[in-house]
Image (cartoon, rainbow, N blue to C red; front, side):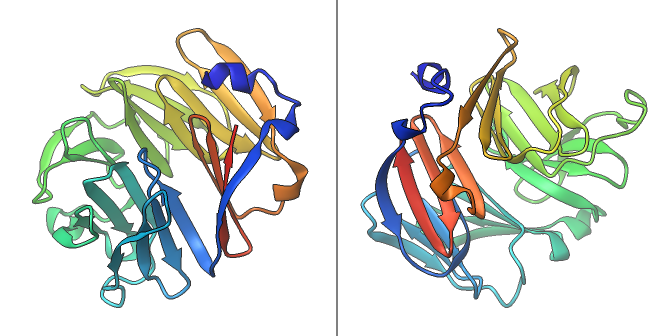
Length: 258
């Protein structure tokens, strides 16, 4: 269904407005159950279900400062990453703190991106020694690749990591996607540069380029493009899920189906 939609690249009327959550939000994401995670300008994180009912609030923001990223791949285990403090905060489905991981205690100081791993641990990319690592709940390293400078002329500097269907994707906006299997073996590179709001659905990598959604499927080596409605050209963020498009625009989160 997803690709039958993508193929209608110029049919921007295919988007249907479904809901708008008004507010003064500066960041957001949505999980695979349709739950919203909304970050206010004061760094308060609020969770709403698909109907808009409150499911939890995380207020302990002064301790960690600015939130860098959220991973809600597993709605029962929400990962918040505070880059300035090299700290990962693990929340339950009601946004209660379950665990806090200070990467500095493991001598890990330069991490831009984290992600939930297939085995309920956490992927990080350590730029100090150029290794993809999987860490446990206490921050200890369970697995790490070789120094990627051995494999590549220039190691990646990923701003996003995704674990899907047995593969790990690192996205560096200046170099593209680097794809590994879950054992750390390099598989391929996908040279899409400069994309924003990247994500992975199955074996398809997606991102926004100007006012287009770009979708590339690794198995079939096919690319699809879909124009976004001109009315949302001034959006601040885009989240793409199968059949659903969410945008942040002027502090409000808007939901479209397609």
